[in-house]
Amino acid sequence: MGPSAYPPISAAFCFHWHNLMSTTVRKAVFPVAGLGTRFLPATKVLPKEMLVVVDKPLIQYAVEEAAAAGITEFIFVTSRGKTLVEDHFDHHEELFEALAGRGRLDELEIVRSVVPDGAVFAATRQAQPLGLGHAVWCARDLVGDEPFAVILPDDLVKSETPCLQQMMDAYADKGGNLVAVVDVPREQTNRYGILETASDDGGEGSLVEITGLVEKPTPEEAPSTLSVIGRYILQPDIFALLERGERGAGGEIQLTDAMARLIGAQPLHGLRYRGRRFDCGSKVGYVAANAAFALDTPDLSVRIEAELRDLLETAQRGAPDGAQGN
Ligand code: G1P
Image 1 (cartoon, rainbow, N blue to C red):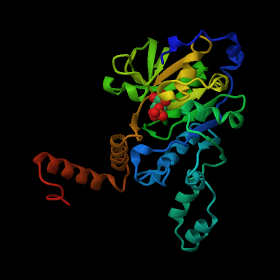
Image 2 (cartoon, rainbow, N blue to C red):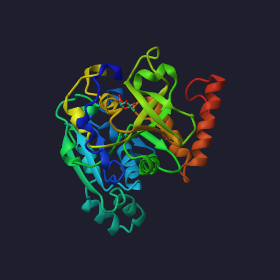
Image 3 (tube, protein in one colour):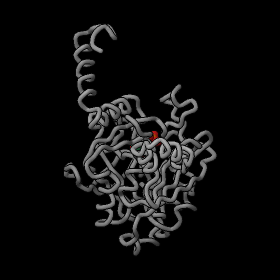
Image 4 (cartoon, protein in one colour):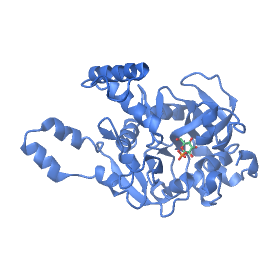
């Protein structure tokens, strides 16, 4: 459903206008209620956010990115079977003592640093799988009346400056609502929120003014190939729009549709972030993320590079699996 399907926004959503520039973003919402059906059987009991890239679960990359951008309150929107996500950020005294007792101080530090200094964690449940917009709405009481970030842990961004920090820098300048955006091949528009823009010079690190947003349009219908990735900074006014419970693409309550309704009432910008996104909601993106992060891990990079080269050469020679290399 495109933005044109909506009536004009009412002035009621402008009441934060005077405040849009000033408030610090302290809270981040992590929707982690999804079923992860694309990764079955791995995700039969394991939450997809606990899938590991090299040596850390996806949710930890997301929390670290948020902490690096100054977030201090971490809000998980969970569902049945997702307690491991919360457990991962719990204090684990037994493990601390065991590692300390054995003098394993490096490992102790690794486990301790799972929880960022000064972090406060909270969780709420999404009782029914009604979509991303609904999941975010479930966090409304924990967020309260202040701007907040949303991070989808499926989207893992490898960048020099963490993606959310890049957004915070842009937010300090522009305020309002912000999403991180990247071009995708036209045949993939039906997997993402797609932008219609007023100005776009296409440069890395540049900001685009968003004039329309459509959730998962077909390649033929897509207004562009510029897509939303799972990083948002939003004003709390979005909750009133989500509250309406209007269904969009896939019969779900879409965050994209609520943001589309903000257009005209509040600034909405897309940041062409600097970095590379791995869509870890897809197998290709997930495997590529493992390769990319491993190639960037000092202890592993040389050996992984040799393995990958060998695999590619073997595949190019058309040899049967495992017939060559080691
Ligand atoms: C969600 C959003 C979509 C966005 C995508 C980024 O889709 O609805 O607009 O482009 O995340 O990963 P989902 O991946 O939940 O289908």
